[in-house]
Image 1: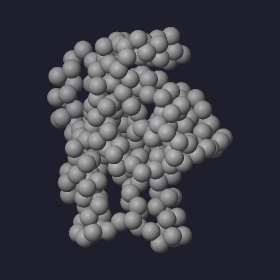
Image 2: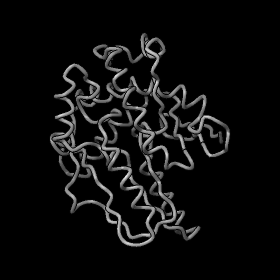
Image 3: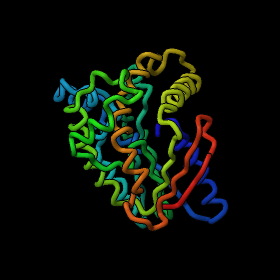
Image 4: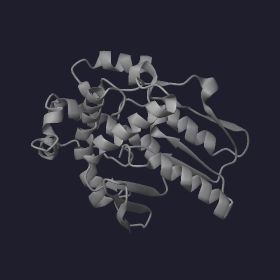
Amino acid sequence: PQGAGKTTLTAKLIQNLGDGYQLKAVCFSLDDLYLTFAEQNNLALGNPSNPLLEFRGNPGTHDLSLGVKVFESLFGKTGLTEIPRYEKSLNNGRGDRLPNEKWTRVELPVDVILFEGWCLGFKPVLDVERVKMLTVGSKFGPDFANFSVENMMAVQDRVGELAMLHQYIDCFVHICAKDIGFVYNWRQQQEDSMRVKLGDAKAGLTCSQLRDFISRFMPQYLIGLPRLESQGFFEQPNGCHLKVVIDKDRTVISSEAI
């Protein structure tokens, strides 16, 4: 989930793979595939009654074709791969993809590709009654009272498109929050850290804006996590899915291979 420490973990993995195993690893994020600010605004305009698609975040707000291009390029033997970068602090915290000259250049070949994202591994739930059962009456209900079942089902249609990127995953690590509500605190910490890094106390989203923003992710967590946690990414035991449960302080409570 957001704020769980995915970026920190992948950075350490890259270092350990290089130092300990002489393997060249590279990481990129689903976040870097978000639509541009202009594209996101067009998406919102095209779905005026769906707040779940108003801002970046949910499936449907990413350029998955761009992700496919990055993966295919990273499989090359020679040359350079350009990995897009997304800056969340732009446009008063609504974000935008950085121009091409600021993308990350990776010299090929690479041995290991690490790809992280908050909704990777989710599969669509297309049964309306099950979506209602998973979301209605949850403790987060007040935060997304304005999201209709129709809004959620529209996102489910986009969740299936993640298969375009899932096809490249050989091993899946699921950082599982003991309580998904921790995300509210974790994302606030991220926002505060970003302001310090940028030296701008007004950068990013306000507390109320951030609460509203995170609330738009909660339906998908409630809809997508039960299947991922019970069946695993590969939906059959193969030892290639590692589930790591963490507490509010991001301390590992348990882990198991599925």
